[in-house]
Structure formats: C-alpha cells, structure tokens
Length: 550
Image 1 (cartoon, rainbow, N blue to C red):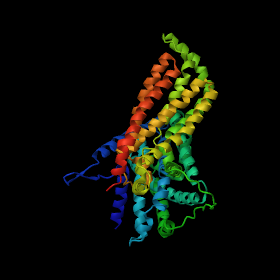
Image 2 (image 1 turned 45 degrees about the horizontal axis):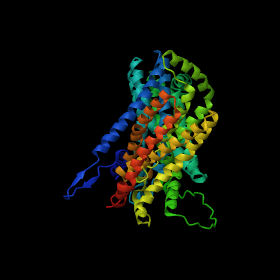
Image 3 (image 1 turned 90 degrees about the vertical axis):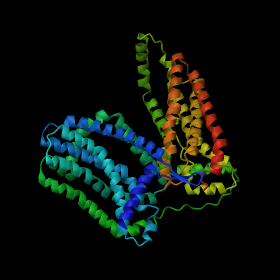
Image 4 (image 1 turned 120 degrees about the vertical axis):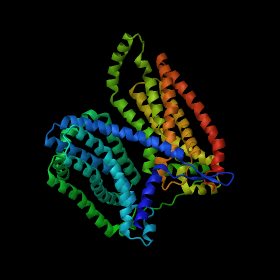
C-alpha cells in the first residue's frame, strides 16, 4: 500500500509537470497516443529554466569562492556554511506554500482516510513528494557550490561526504520547518480577512525581492560573502557542516543528527495529529448576509462578473497571469523615481551620438520609449490563456446554461481587458504629468498599449482554444503549467517584442512618437482582428461542439 501511495504521488508530480499521454480516437476506431510534442516542449522549457538558474547559481558560487576560499580550513567552513544556509532558505521559500496545500489542504485527504490506509502511510507518501521538490531546490544551490569548492580547494574525503550529506539532508531540515510554518500559515490564513489580498502581497514581496537581488547581484554577493558567512557559522547546524568539510570528523556525526532529529520529531507529531489536522473545520470567517434588491443584468455581464470574481479570488491566477501589469507598475515607479537622472543623461547621450554623425533629439523620442515600455509590459499579461482549461469538469455547467458560446468567450476577453486597462490608464496619466507630455503624446501613451492589450487577450484565448485541456488535477496547474500558457507567453514575446522593436527603431529614426503610436495601433488592430475573427468563428464552434464533449 505504501508503494502504491508513493508511486501515486510521484506520478502526480510528473502529471503536474508534463501531463499524461492522452489517447486520441481515430476515425477507424483505433487509438493512438498523443503528448510527445508536449513532452518535448516542456523539456525545452525546463532545460532553458535550468540553464538560467544554474548560471545564476554558478555566478554566485564563483564570486564567493574567489572571496572566501583562500586555502584555509576556516575559509572552507565559511563557504560551505554560507551555501548550506542559502539552500535552506531557497527550499523554504520554494516549498512553504506547496507544503501547506499538500499536507493540510489536499483535496483527497478525507477520501484516503476513509480507506483502510494507515494515516502514517498517507503522510509519509506526501512527504516523499515534498522531499523531492526540496531536493531539487537544494541541488540548484549546492551542486554548483560544491563544484567550485572542489575546484578551488584541496579535495578531501570529509569535504566530499559533507557536500553529499548537505545535498541530501538540507531538504529534510527544510521539510521539518515548512511543515510547522505551513500549519501556522494555514491556521492564520483561515482566520484573517482578505486572504487573497494578503497572499498576493506576500508573493509580490518575494518577487520584488528576487528582482532586487538579480539587479544588484554583484553588490549582494560581496555583502552575503562577508556578512552571510558570519550568520551561517553562527548557526550551530551549518557550523558543524562547515567544520566537517574542513576536516573535523566529530562534526560529521553532529550535522546529520541535527537534520534527522527535527524531521523525525515533526513527523512523529504529525502522525499523531494528522487525522485531526486533515479533517479540521478551519472556521473561515462567515460573511454577514445583507438583504439587497437584486438588479437584472444581461448574461454577458453575469459571465464577466463570474470571470472577474474567480480571477480576484485566486492569488496564483493574479500573479501568474498578470505579470505585465506588475511590470507596468514597477516601470512607472522607476521612471518617476529616476526622472531627474534620466533627464541629466539625455544631453550627454545626444552629444555622444552627434559625434557619431547621428542627429537624435532625445527629448523628442522620450514619448516613443515610454509608449514602447507600456506596450511591452501589457503584452506579458496572459489572463485568457488558461481561462478555458481552468473550467475543467465545470465546463458542462457553462454548456448547460442558456447562454451563447460567443458570450462565454467574450466574457473571458473582457475579464482580461478590464484587469489590464486601469493600470494602463494610471501609467499614462502619471507618466504624462511627471514628464510633461503633450495631449497628443498622452493620447498615444493611453491608446496604443490598450490596443496591444486587446490583441494580447485575443492571442491568449486562441492559444487555449488550440490547446484545451480539462483534465488538470487543480486550477493552479492549468494556470501555471498548461501548454496554452507557455505558448501564449513565449509566442506573445515573438509576436509583439520583435515587431514593436522594429516600429520603435523606425519611429526613433524619424523622432516621431505619433508614427510609433499609429504603427503600433495598426499592427495591434491587424493581429487582434485575426485572433477575434477566429475566436468568434472556428473557436466558438470548437468550444461548443468539441471541447468538453466526450
């Protein structure tokens, strides 16, 4: 039974990442497997992400190795202690929310507990899957760090064993911590109002912290190497690991014990209380009913309201599908904050270009750059990309309603546009005031990104109509890992980044923001018309007769 549970958990991870090879019926009654293309697509994507993260980790490891590995035992201890601490932090940040969902809010907890399966076996199988997730995060930090440690130090047996033990045991320590924190977060989130807003703000804070780290990596590496080593060696667990890698055999026994003991204690406590935790009524705040007069609205308005309500009730939907809006807000703040710096740079840049026989008036092309930045940001939004797949088994409810398929699809487009439009308008107003743009430039800064936003909404919905999947185990899987979302994001980059860059180059050559705005609106109008034409012809027919029909 335990083997079956572990196999089920691991297969669910694989399904979450890649999906399963669906059987597609042919006209002659035979079946064939599909899904190879999806595996190749996801393989390329994960290889790209792995290369990016490994490159960042190698850069940090190389910088720290050059500063800390001076051949002394203390330098080795400080180095490995620092990266063990960083690995623990990354494991914690990357798995604390999934631990909460997997252990305390898993949808199949009660169903499994109703079967003749020991609760400890259910808990163990879930922790095994969480351990592999933590092991992946740990490897991203510790494998490159270990490689540079071997390259810049004299290799010893304790050093190799210490790196291996750190890789295998740090995830257990992280799992023990996240299990406790996850229980606290689950309890706290169920008691606090505005759960969605709080969760969204927490994720945004983590994201902004990552961006600050990425943009200031050189300075951060020096500070972390200097101060982080002191913190890491001050924590007895990492101090034992560092001293073991430096040659102290006694610490080689203390470090594994310091990781295994907390995990064993937490696991024992959870086995005693898992049933009560999994079946507990978390007592979410009840809304007080207020009698109001109901106003009659159209079916389109009701469908749009439903889409908006679902969007704003799911923090991960907000974060993963509206990153462009977040980039737009960040760009607006940076442009306002660094306005004086940019203004001071313009005369120097204009002089340098004039020496190269290029006659540019940078003040004339500032509206072009501002409009380009806003348009590129909104093209990142992909709210419509998972909007069909997220219906999952609930799609029959839409089909059973007395509404037209075109209204269902239009409501998904309107949700994207309604979410994106307010921040685009705010961006145009704030930037126009601070940069003292003319009324014509303000209109261009307002309308061109709105045209791009509408076309981007159509592109995302087309991707989901081309690649619909209703068999995801959860809504969040459809939002984060569906092929339609990947196609919408990376295809949108190719669809808008390159053409808008060419349009910007032409407009800069003529120093004309009006030219950029008109060409951008024309391009967005052409592409958007193609997408909308498909959605309300072939896409509508496919949604009505093929998607969700057995």
